[in-house]
Length: 205
Image (cartoon, rainbow, N blue to C red; front, side, top):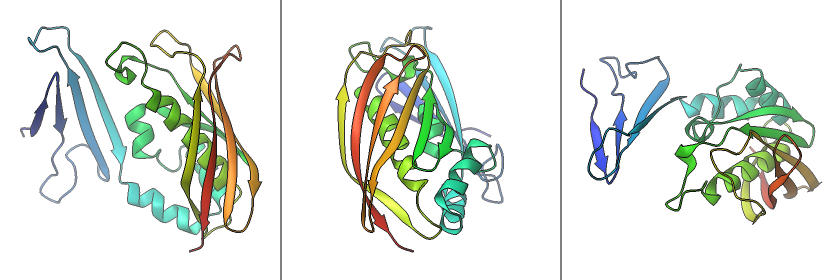
């Protein structure tokens, strides 16, 4: 079966189509995307990355029925799939406790901007994910959250040569309607790459 291809400048994206039952042709409940980069002349130095993710509605349904900390710890254990965003960018939730969450990533070329370093959006996504997860870890079943304000301070450049990064998010304050958190993005030696603060709106079921 041929995969439909969407061509954009210097890259192509191939999506795995569904089978006759409406499921993707890889694994039930999953979608797959293949991203290939090349220069305008089509030389053979292209890089390819395959991203596979699970149906996000499954995790969203579980989140409504579970306390936030239980839900996050199930993701850490691999019992609930990572978010599609995490699969796409390549980061993982590795720790979760009450009021604290850690996400980790190995930076790579796929995160680069047009000037040859990792895009600031990667650090922002890691900070938001760690802080949001920290907030979620304090919430009971049936209560959700959404980010309403995010502040990011970039301290050190990130490249493909940067060692594995850990983003540690912690709740600063949680009330009945709003919660605030802070996070630091560090390498294995404790060097700071970015830091951030966030405000989340808490929402009942």
